[in-house]
Image (cartoon, rainbow, N blue to C red; front, side, top):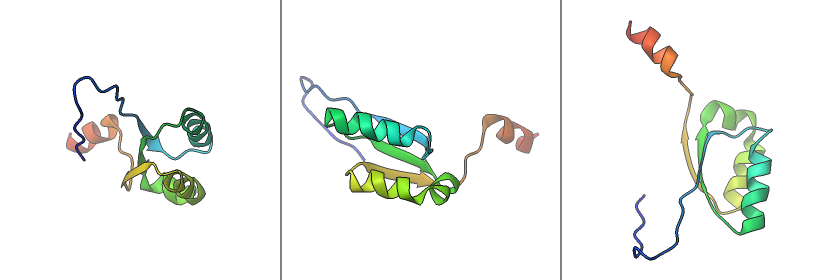
Length: 82
């Protein structure tokens, strides 16, 4: 997605990555709600399946959603390419 705004516009793009998690997602949602802000949540599918209620909460709060199924670390990628 690409959004364009005048250079004078005061815009910040917030992303929340690698969740949802029971520890952090509710806290982030509360902060965003308190400030009337929106964010893009980049979910890990395995984690989303473990916490579908948090996925629903982010969607119902009108945040953007994106997802991949699994989370792979750089170490895992290095080991796989060796």
